[in-house]
Image (cartoon, rainbow, N blue to C red; front, side):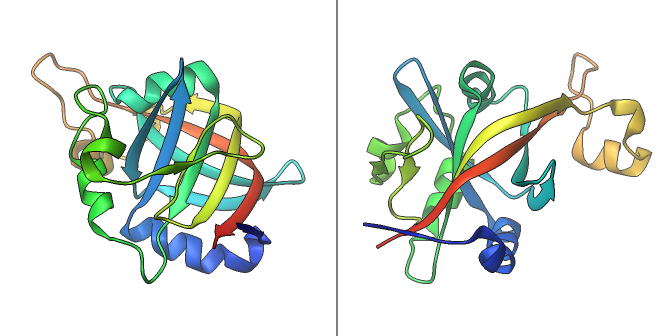
Length: 173
C-alpha cells in the first residue's frame, strides 16, 4: 500500500537522508539499475516541486537517464537496511543485477515507468524537466581538484545535473 505524502512536509527528512545516502533507480530497455547518491536537493522552480541530483557521465545509470528521463528516489526510514547504500554504491549494474545480488525488491511506479526500492519506503517519483552538464570552468578550483581529479587520460569525470519534477511522493506501508 502507498500512503501519498506532501513532499514539502518531509523535506527535512529527505535532505537529511540524502546526506547519508539514498537510492536512485532508473530504467530503460526493460532493465532497471539502482545506484547510491548523496548529492541532491528539493526545491521549487517553475511552480513545481523538484528534486535535483547529479550523476557522473561514466555511470551506468547515466545511460538509463539519458534514454528514459525518469527516475525514483528511494529513501530509508528507521527500520530500513542501511547496507544497500554501500552495496549499490560500490558495485556497477553493468556487472551484476543488484536487486538479485543484494536481495532487494522493486515496486512499480505510478506516474513513472521506473520502479522504486521496496525496502526504502519513502519514495519520490521524478520526471526530468531540465539537465545540464557541469561546466569545469565554473567549478571553484579547490572543488574541481577534490571532486574531479584528472584521470590518466587527462579528463575529469564530470556530473550531469538532472532537475526533475516530483510527480508523486509516498510511503510504502
